[in-house]
Image (cartoon, rainbow, N blue to C red; front, side, top):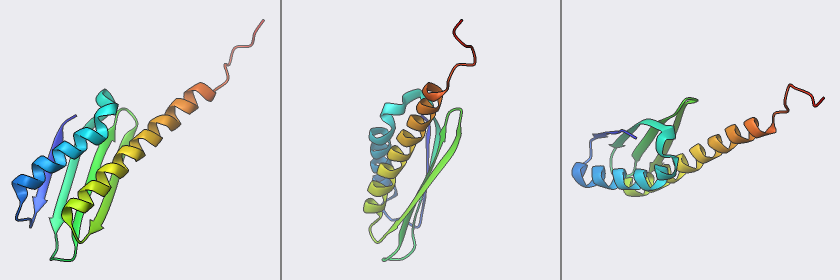
Length: 109
């Protein structure tokens, strides 16, 4: 899993970067080889509005994006990492169910 982090208008760029990496590794570690590049975009638009957006690629099925807006940037990071982990888990479960749920084309002779 490769993580790219973009921080805009935030004073604590270094602290935020390490915090986000730790939270992402915790939330996505169970998916190991299934998650491709992950892009994190954070911005603090004044004291009352902080935004965190995470885009991840679920190999080989497509992209997933989650965004959270909160007054505290660390709270937004906590919420968005939790949501992306649950969303990827649901997508993988849906894919597994689709594979297992299919009936064979061949009929028993």
